[in-house]
Image (tube, rainbow, N blue to C red; front, side, top):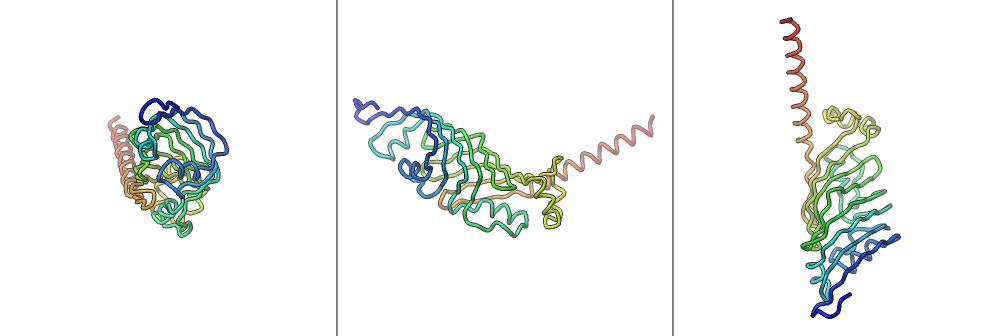
Length: 217
């Protein structure tokens, strides 16, 4: 800590286990009562200021975290995915998970990540995006339904069941915007359907060409 400048300058290099995430976020940002869980965290950041707003604006560096058995409060992400897939379960307003991990670059009042990974039961989410200290959200995610769950839900999924990949998993793009207190979701099932239709068309063309070549030979 450098107290010589008019605004104190802080340099923090740390490795913490057993961190109460909600208490840490509540003490350092405006994101209170949003993310719960116990985390392992490593940081290398620098900032300046005498109050939280100034520190948020100046904070820069890197962080890496992994949460276990946590919850994102009032964030019905899994419920939105279930609804888009026509699954009746999972209507909770909270998103509970077994693990949540990411490495992030901090700067300009935001934390940016390219390797977000959330595991919640039979669902896995990967993606990239940013979360602002002002509570803003901008994430592009890929939701993967396990092969076992996809097979179990095949009757309910209807035409969507044909969108499973070679591993039998169903992968759906999800966009998350808005704020931590008022998140907005876009579950883009249509994109997956168009992609599948394009792939089927390509396969049909290839088969047709192969038949044509055989006739010519």
